[in-house]
Length: 101
Length: 191
Image (cartoon, rainbow over all chains, first blue to last red; front, top):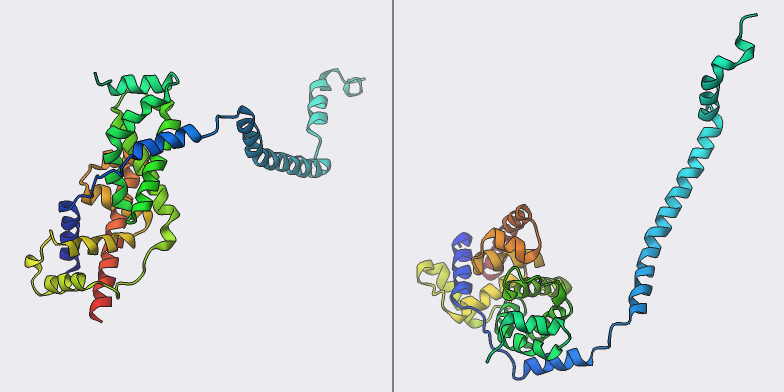
């Protein structure tokens, strides 16, 4: 069987027979009744929902930052202290112990 | 005197929900015709149409009025249909062994005389519906919009919210998927 030809025929069949656009009786009344029956927007509900949605990303960020600070403190305790080095370099020129006697 | 679309929308946004009813009346045939492309059962079609209108009411403030209301509504309809397809993708049929009599006859007629197989036959429509139902949601959407409704890629991108390259990639995959399904149909029928 020629599948490409079959595909062409079936697509053509779908094209020549467009779907029905009939609307059920009083459909618009049903939609309007549904809209009227909907509860009003409660701002507190939206606020609470937003807070709950934000809770998980905030927890993830807090955990990541905590882990980063922990790992940093462990590695920096063994390494040279950058702040101390900076201070030594800055004050080297006024260090009296380095002055020639 | 009949109020214009812009007047009706402005009235709804000012807090007069009753002005929404003429919009529902005017555009429901388009919404139903689109929904019937993706759902077979009438109850599902009505559910889709209802959801489209509820969403349209909720999001009406986001309609800027730069394009016609109908375009905005069609975007909403197509996206709702896509959500429907994704929610119901587990219900896709998986066999062609249960073809109806007219479907089998049409297929046999096509095998013996491909040119003589009528495209207008109801059996051909049933077969294409059956094949489309087996496609993945994205493939079905893109085949319907591109091949059946003959819309340009750019318009499909606007309707679906996908980028133009993504539409092209999905169209390529969808055609391959459809060919595979038709091959399976031929195999199930003749082996």
